[in-house]
Image 1 (cartoon, rainbow, N blue to C red):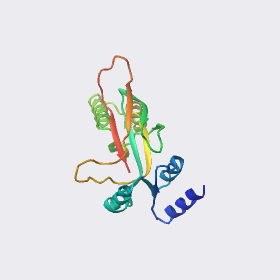
Image 2 (cartoon, one colour):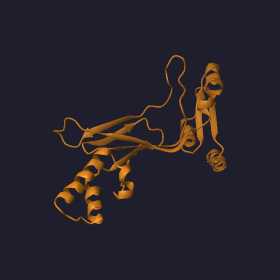
Image 3 (tube, one colour):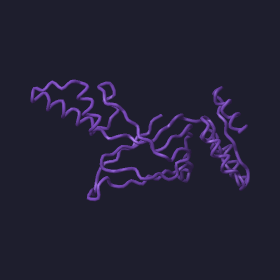
Image 4 (cartoon, rainbow, N blue to C red):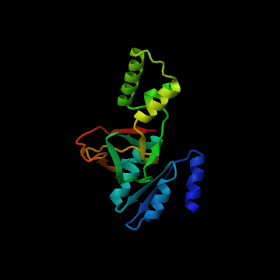
Length: 193
């Protein structure tokens, strides 16, 4: 695709590209191509007022990205991600295995950090010398696996106009309990960029 090649070449030179489609017949497969290229953005203007809004009123929000390689991840022992709706780029979830080591302890959820502390205290109280490799294996088993929900190559901010209505995307996540008797639990969502 020639357009995709142009966009990728521009991105390699740190040039961000925004495309404005005018009219109702803006090609949806073209928009999919555009948003998959880092630094690229698209808009659709159906009326003259839309064009003014995109190019003038929200110029600084629409044409200057605030983050690249943004990922939304979730982890939970009690719930399983069943499906995501509205993800613009990657709607397929991917399991991320982060090996527990002392140096990345802070990257784990607070509950996992408490469990690590409890295990260490228990070993100390019982005068057990648990080798770090064994401790790491136990923590890898205890720690919930992080699931990548979606990834955005480029993230653009949203403006908040005078009426307080923010225009932007919406992502809905559908979870199911990991066991049929489960009534409540915790789901940790994390945004990384």
